[in-house]
Length: 237
Image (cartoon, rainbow, N blue to C red; front, side, top):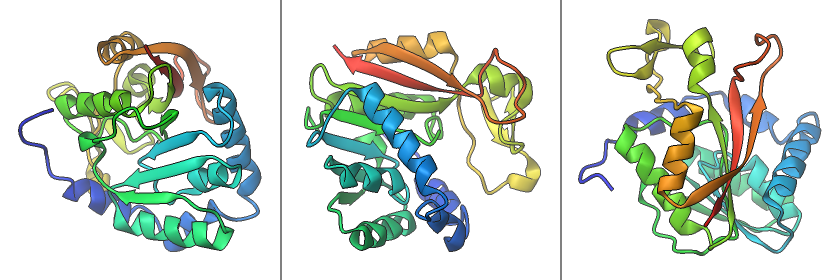
């Protein structure tokens, strides 16, 4: 763990101003529900778990996936640093009539010790901190999951972003080695993305062995390789 962590204020500001309330609530609409349920089906299959397994959903945002998991009988803890997102998660879980623990916290300073059957960090938020702090996130993930338990990480890939940019918002900056927001998107925080060999090395260093490397693209992306992002399933050894 670095002696001094960078401020969360820019990250909180970015996600507080991320989108309108209407857009954030769309994930809970009947229109979005089939997509969310299909994603959760995939995650459950990859993790190989059944209710009432206990899951940690890091950077849970508005909690739409955590609520879908809780509806299936999983015991869900959702952690996020943005109060606005957690307010929506609490309201929506109450409306859905499901129980989940919503925690305001910093994923760099997790103090869980082998408490969860699985950990998820999805929605491509990994890399928003300096490299030592990104490693601290992975160390916390590895501590939080039980021995033999799986972790699911959804991340952008360096290879794709280096060639094509990222979400039309970021460009690669050689000097910093990070993807910096274009001037018109100056409210965004920069990101550090990693190659496949770097990912495998980082995960191995914290005691997580890669079991699945599942690439994904969006419509109109160039044909792979490389993929825009990957879902990584790694198990604590």
